[in-house]
Amino acid sequence: MSQYAALLIALPLISAFFVPVVKRLSRRAVMPFLVLITAVQTGIAAWVFNEVYTTGKPIIIMAGGFRPPVGINLYIGHFAALFALIIALVSLFMAAFSAKAITVEPKDKYAMLFLLLMLGATGMISTGDIFNLFVFMEITAISAYALTAYNKTGEASEAAMKYIILGGIGSSFFLVGIALIYGSLGTLNLAQIGLLASRMNPAVLQASLAMLVFGLAVEAELFPLNAWAPDAYQAAPHPVTTMFSAFVVKAGLYAMIRIMYLFKDTPAFAGILRLVLILGTLTVVIGELSALRQTNVKRMFAYSSIAQVGFIAVGFALGTQAGVNAAVFHMVNHAIVKALMFLAAGYVAVELGGVSLEDFRGLGRRMPLTAFSITVGAISVIGIPLFNVF
Amino acid sequence: MNISVYYFGAISLILTGLYAVLVKRNLLKILVGLSIMETGVNLLLISIGYIAGRSAPILSEGVGPNKAVDPIPQALVLTAIVIGVATTALALTVAINLYETYKTLNVEELRRLRG
Image 1 (tube, each protein chain N blue to C red):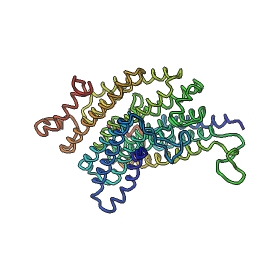
Image 2 (image 1 turned 135 degrees about the horizontal axis):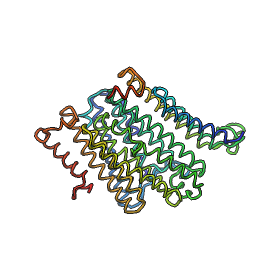
Image 3 (image 1 turned 180 degrees about the vertical axis):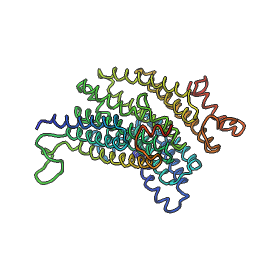
Image 4 (image 1 turned 90 degrees about the horizontal axis):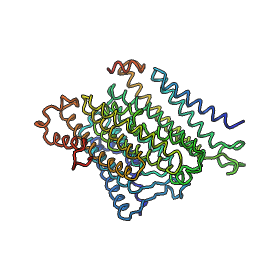
């Protein structure tokens, strides 16, 4: 029964390839189709979530019936189930929002990339195989590049180009890291790597971990590698910006942390924790300081979101149970709040035609409900008690 | 031949590519640099699975499991090549878009034009 959880991956993949067929039938059916698929995905994710939390056992799916470590497996534990649900929910809202916000043709390509982005992020958090992780990372990255450039303006193309170059370097380094690990342990299964980790030569281990962290830090927008983020957030279509902030970045961060914690018992672990701690702290400081200077609201939120990701990374890198719990909690909260903020800002942009601070003047009178939701989001981002980010 | 030759070649390819990405001004050269980097990584993966004196892991006459090299890195490289092609194609389309908008591929001028 639990094998049906593989639909989490299979459904968006197969429906992405059915988008052109739907377009053939009726041009107008593309967006409702997108909403329908994301709704079904949400249903499946909710069922998986329920299953995992009532039985208390993770769902493990073996692709093609091969037992790990030979075959590729999916590992949906407590956190992955929760996060798959969040991804599906945010995607559902964004799909509904896209129907209104996306005016540039070709919409069918948009729907396809949208589904692939959702698929990639879901795959990244649920896979149990390090090379499979790389593949899902690339699926996410390529659809993210394309969606960034979707508006076809010069600005969007430039942001996408920046993202492609940084992402390309990152993925090459990630692959080198995989090569080093495979070369010394002879396995690609995450659980088995964890078991065998202490047998690795410490120098090789440290080098490969550094490569893997570097590769994923591009996706997770940690400080020296996050130059793409503000441009991409600003230039991408509004629903896509929300998806980036709410789960694409989190999936990268989660993958990074999961790989790091596999090597918990080795001498390299302390060094790598310190590295991530420093990167995270720098990310927070630089993100928040840059957010102050911005006049474009989307760009401001982008910097704020970078800083929040830095906070999450710091929480994970503390290396204690409390730190990890806090980081996971913050991750969930941030996904919800930032989705709200970007959604509200995007809605304002669609209605009023701009996202600079001037466009927001008098918002309370013109769009009271939207203004209210931005206020709620902002209050909770600054951490007033009783709101969830506190 | 000693296996370290392959490692050396792969790593120098990666570094050459990285140099091109970081130093060159022309967008196309940067993209070529990225491709060179990817090639280097692929070569590294392949040479990790290489066992001296064995042939390609294809089941055919006279080639059994104990006469072939490790097939997993080759499968990985196959996937990585496909991903690399997709990335390169996408990057080139974006570069065409950029050129049509700004009439230049020089990275510094692009930055200036955008202001």
